Length: 321
Image 1: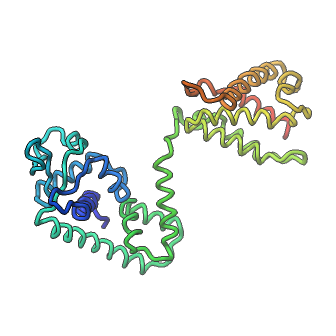
Image 2 (image 1 turned 180 degrees about the vertical axis):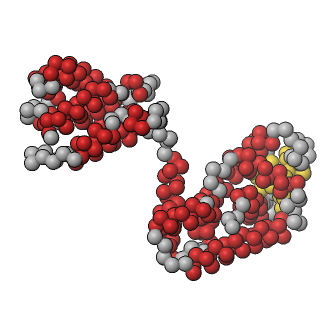
Image 3 (image 1 turned 30 degrees about the vertical axis):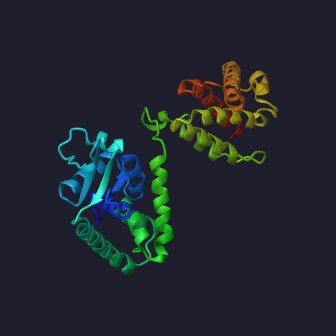
């Protein structure tokens, strides 16, 4: 069973108190901004409230003492369990953590519990065969990120698995920082370009043109738009219209396609002229504008020309089939 997160937090706070306490008996000067980066590597999604609750428990149960600065008296013992705004108090930084007679015994107790948990997992892990990656990741998911991180530093994963365990940790870290996708509708409506269009293009084979790059550009455009990366959306749109002119009667520029290509009819021509003006100006503005005193960031409405892009892609598919 994984070590409870509150126990990991308490264990680290006690270690910090013992390791960094002043020799003059004034304790370890701390605040939430100081403590949080020290504990955070061991606990996923650590909050100020997690730290505050742990400090209140440790102080209440005499596992450590909290000292507060009182003018004219110095640092004196201070009880925080009854405070209405403990997070505010711990953010101020005018307190210290001091060991009590119970600090060492309690730290030894919870450390022993942690090692028992780790020993059980290690025995199971060491006796197992080399797992395929999906099964390995499933087991790591069940253990939880905090426990896996702790286990990697204490050595209960075998050397054969350490690399894959680290890859799983890095994957989880990457997932944690990715912005959420902006799905406002279900299915293909959330994409800048219909996925079915891209799949149609992927199936086309031509002796004259390689569509690998174009397919990848469409995919990256979809991904950028869905994640709200509107600078990238504008720049990729600009790059795509510069990439495809040779498909249309060997034109060299997209302006040539917009003004002279007649295969798509009048509506197509008007739409491409609009796309050329809009995508080029918006893209160039974001690509070439120097840094300024103040900026406004692009919005979805500014960079979206999805209807014209869909019409362009459908014409490419039609003439290349």
